[in-house]
Image 1: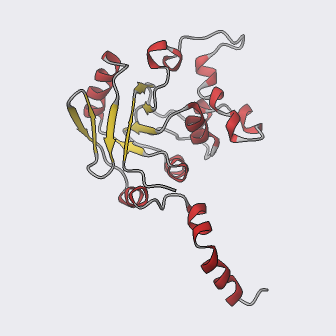
Image 2 (image 1 turned 45 degrees about the vertical axis):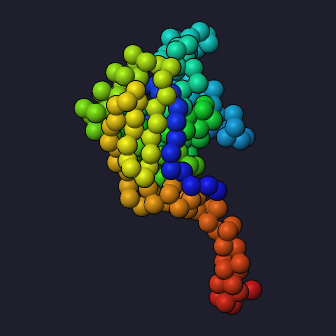
Length: 196
């Protein structure tokens, strides 16, 4: 697992406060065998009619195809704690989410997948969104070390939990990977407990 310090990619704005995990990935997709199948289901009910006809959602607009940063508003990822929501975001192709705030469990699930959740104040985020909408083909750049996002020579500040920031900078954000890297020490502790 490598450090996550800097990223670049185009952005897309999905408007709305309190976007919950059922909107992000409808419950019927929880029956999937692997998470790999989840990408097409991202915001499925908001993107398509029951007939399969497009509703013209921003994620399906040609200008935003291939966008890698999902920008939204307050309390993103609220609702049930389903891990499928960040998995769907990742499998759709997003590498990071920018919002005013995040639901706690969603934030944690994103972190373990290596998806940074960047917290950005409303006023600055509105300016960023305007730039993205006016220049959808331009790349955003963000740097976890400096806590800065830049687009077209304009810079914006973001925040993130310091513990999460340190985990990304030290490549220790995935607890399963941490266990595997320390398998010897885990075995030694298990052997010392006398349950063998």
